[in-house]
Amino acid sequence: MKDLFVLTADADALAFMNSILSRHASLSIRAISFDSMRHPMKDAGVIKDGPETARLYKGKFCKALLLWDYHGSGHEKRHSPKESADIIQRRLDGISWEDNSGAVVAVPELEEWLWCSASSLARYFSLEEVRLEGWLKDYANKHRSTVEKMIQDSPKEVFEYLCIEKLKRSISPRDFEEIGRIASIRKLEDSKSFAKILSLLRRWFPS
View 1 (spheres, rainbow, N blue to C red):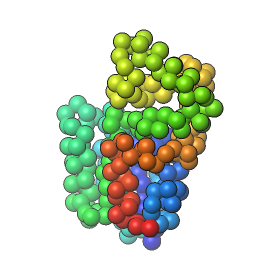
View 2 (view 1 turned 45 degrees about the vertical axis):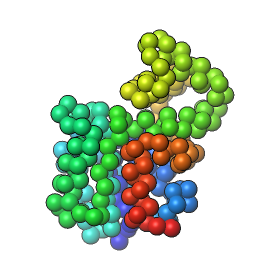
View 3 (view 1 turned 90 degrees about the horizontal axis):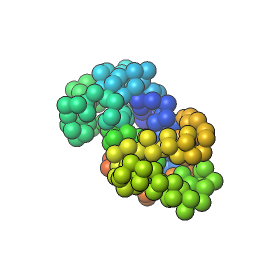
View 4 (view 1 turned 30 degrees about the vertical axis):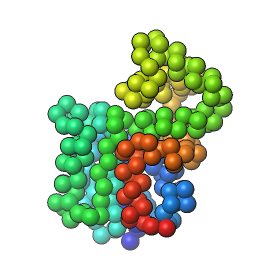
């Protein structure tokens, strides 16, 4: 039996989690065996039948982790992030994953994690941090906002601005995979959703 089954909403989250989970020493957990998959219906799919998908792997894995974006899930229209996670967790508990599973919603979306460690982004894209900061300030000024608020409210759009408009490059899961390899775990803990995952991993798989 493997240690952990991970269900994500898309290929970007899958790539990032695969990298993160391979860094057991940085996470302060033991080395673990895991399999991961993405839901073909993305965020709304995890909401629709993520717990039922996880049930198919009961008996093959000790723990299960579900991860989706708040924006695009459908829950953002009628539930708070906490309510969304609680709803999915109750469904997991109801199909015998109680005490052995975690339901985690990235708010507003996964790209929030990337901006927790902006220095890692600069390193990955071979940018001077001061140059990246200047681009972000220009973007925020253009939208009559602040860098902090833009990253908080629209992290995906800011990341697309950086990659597509400024760096003239497309975005692929490989980017998330490589950023996951170098991102600061300490800085990622600034994200409540990542901190929840880290807390679960450390409780489940102590070093």
